[in-house]
Image (tube, rainbow, N blue to C red; front, side, top):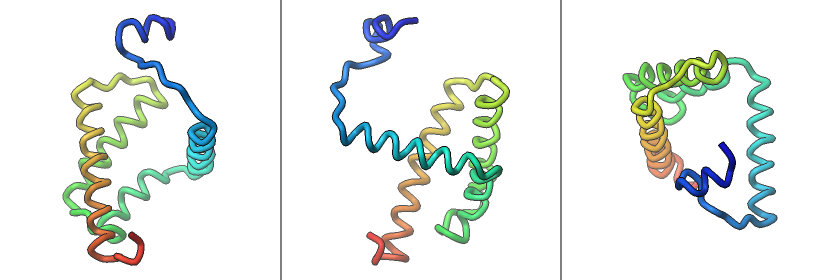
Length: 111
């Protein structure tokens, strides 16, 4: 599939990019590469959420299960259903919102 085909079928949208956007993209990639050098960093992050950001410990099993599915997809090529992928996106959005709220309530000096 070419980029032109993806544009034509609506899977991509044309986008003019600027220097700042490219700098942010590379900064994000650099952070990801630094993190990639730490085996188990995603698992550690998830396990620390109840203590570090007040996330309900009951959610940790779900978040860790989604992390495991992501690893299998990334490293073993195991497919993930669209439903599971969307569940992961929604859980990520929910988690970000919860952590933001926790920071507002517990560490307002950081907002």
